[in-house]
Length: 191
Length: 175
Image (cartoon, rainbow over all chains, first blue to last red; front, side, top):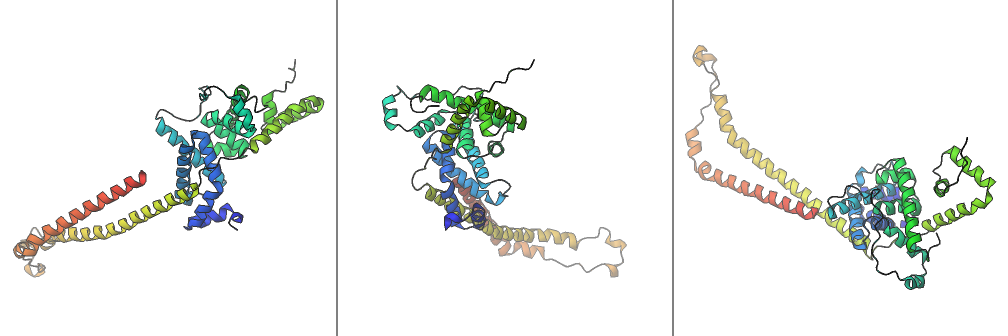
């Protein structure tokens, strides 16, 4: 029954103060918001904090949600800005999580263990790890476009950028992901 | 001389993602029809896109939604307390305003009771009967001498207490 209720109905009920409607919205989007937060902040513990904060902010500003955009677009925009604030708190010098000027920073994982990776034989896990190695912006745009299947226009709204910029960023993110996959996970993923 | 058309990887991705203009799209489409061997590249991209789309989302730890709701309920309760606190403040402010007015009233009455600067120019029958206020009795009464300072002291402490409580609550919520 709860699953059949549309976002619009749940939002309306939440606006009227129904706690269960809030809870249903959290349940429905917790994985998406958490995954996106994880793409940006790169750490599960921090992603929990960011996702929780994003939901609280979303509920706080729910009366301002006019419904011009999809609820998810609006929610992911909040997740993005909350992540940006979180990263800024950690590093006050950071202006954006766009790293066009910086090379992809590969975390030092010690000696690669191909046997372990082959044991898992999980292409998805390898691809997830490759995405995690991307910069926050690159990982975010790849997640939003290819995983969540948001349009470029929606991504522009979420990440507050122009169409041209988004297109270029997506192309570069794809190239960087390809570079990581070919360099690190070529045995697990045939790109 | 026209450059030969080269179908790059990025162009194919843009074609698959639907980013090309109608002219570019037609050009790529025609090229692929003429070079069916290149279709495998497009198929590989389509596979890659499918792989992306099928990636599972990450699960937050168990009880995440409950924690969010607990935080939300707690925040709401905090807001309600602040709102309730604000309501009480209005009562206090109203009482303070009444007290202020009470203190200002004698000063106001002085102006009302002694309005004319040249009363000798006005015939006595036209002069209003000015009220006689026993100022000395009022200010020397025990109520004014002891009661007023105590009341003012009480409200001063009350204001200070309310201010500190709100400050503490806001700091707690922001944390």
